[in-house]
Length: 157
Length: 157
Image (cartoon, rainbow over all chains, first blue to last red; front, side, top):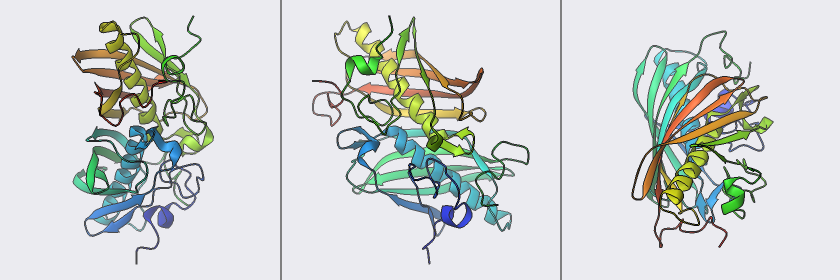
């Protein structure tokens, strides 16, 4: 069913640091649709630490940003009956770090749409690990038009 | 004068992904005091992209988070007349992306203290490149006590 992530389906050549399947030095986040949510599991490497044993907050934000962006892209695509996601970019994202995130455990991400307008969606996401919420994020993601530097840069064709 | 960054002076063994001098796979941000501000210049690598030619927003947040944290640590240290910075961790950070950030240019960071309480500081920071502001960030950074997992983990001794 969910063998192929949204990134692999729609942007296999992307080298985005956070979620590009083709970036060997990136985080290669893989996001999957699950009901009304977008979910992901990701395993930190040692060099993603803030200090020994704990995951860096910037990496946490990177995961939540990319995962939220894909939640928005998926939502807008389905809402508008499109065959491909629109090119969405992040306008803002705000991260709250609730407690330290262990480096040795996989992290779980869940994102849901809060609201959407014609060209954008607001997404709330949570990152948990070892059974506890560790961070939350609220972000705004905007579909860009032809002419924007991001337009279709991350899509296969 | 400013030959040694705050990270090199106070946390040379840190392997923090964003700013640890000892993390060869990290961003190795180097922050310098300049009057009432903390400044840094950082050059992106190709694998830090969002899409070809543009810097990833998660990397931008990571830089602003670490730079803001050091601004807070430096401020609290001087305010309280300490010889070493306190161990500060990020409670929250909120990033606004104003326009795309080019991948081929160095980015400039400036952070300033907005307010501080006994154990924390609020910091505003801006990232610019090629002469234009590209992103802003407001974060809250909190000094942790003995017993917290971060306590003295990133300091040399």
